[in-house]
Image (tube, rainbow, N blue to C red; front, side, top):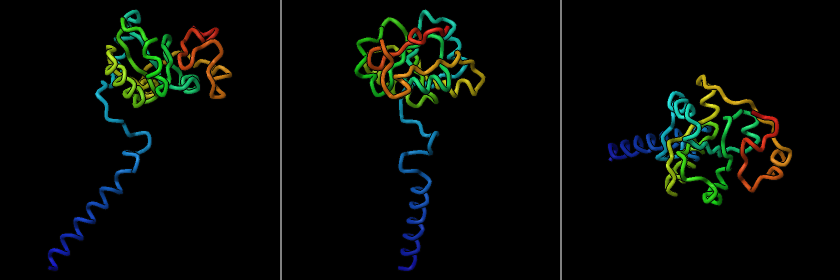
Length: 170
């Protein structure tokens, strides 16, 4: 009886320690990656794709203020992750797609959604991660006034915001 009680106590301690090591949200903040099938592109892989911009389409799923503060890539389509399903018909199917977010977590979820919807997806990349690993981002773009207040920029449809919508940026 004493051995059984000791064994149960030890198992309970191990189970509690494992539960404490795993936060309720499934991982430590900033380090948790949702389970996806999307390939996380390395800087070298991403740079090789960027060398042929006529063949790819970058879909940045970040908010305009995130793109403005961290920076982005010269040509992209901005559709926030929460609105992606509503804009699938607007995305060309003749290009291979790379999805972008800050650390590739949201981009990976978006890549899975696009792949499941019949798009050819090359992978996902994090703009901040790319830059910290030596990659060069385009200039930071000014946040349009409506986007800074949580609304959509004037002249852009709900959720789609492209590099061309940034006046004066190259």
